[in-house]
Length: 250
Image 1 (cartoon, rainbow, N blue to C red):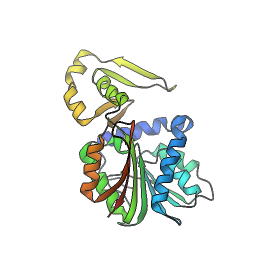
Image 2 (cartoon, one colour):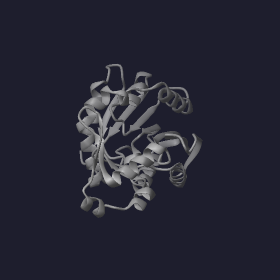
Image 3 (spheres, one colour):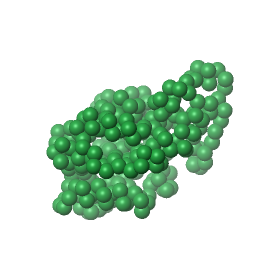
Image 4 (tube, rainbow, N blue to C red):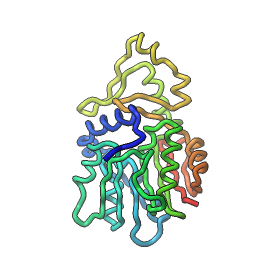
């Protein structure tokens, strides 16, 4: 399958996620915590009764996809990382109606108005603001009228994420093969060559663990989603670790 609208950053992110996919599934990141299950339930309640067609964008190791599919919904799991998608499919049970697709969220391979609900968690954080708008336009296109969007993403204003943005200006940061955090000071020429704290703060950008991160703020997400046509129904505090937005296509 040809994957369109894929930048070098997208490919680096996908490659790194493939490298860490196996251990990613086995630690806490592969589990649905109680607070995450609460978010699933809000999403499903907004979708209403009956079996739905749900698209999980940036499915990772499939914790949301598997949760929805085990309840009888038709789930389409989409990820740009072959390794992550493989972890999702390998956990699929015979009773689950789950299909995997390797594709870019900026060009979704689904017909317009074909999806009842689109779920995406910790995926659009890897896109700069302009690319997020492109992805949101695709989300709007594939969701049916009155369809539901559930979006959860890391918040730039959370202290840990602000710290990561600053650290990545001066250090190589990430996690080693045993999932232990490391921080190695960059050489002065490398700092000078890539130095722009102001730009990093404006874009919310950090390079960590071989992946490109663009931490958003709630105001930007609200504006971009409204601009493409979504009507926002619920959201949480703009200062929490994650931004949770539930919206409907109007």
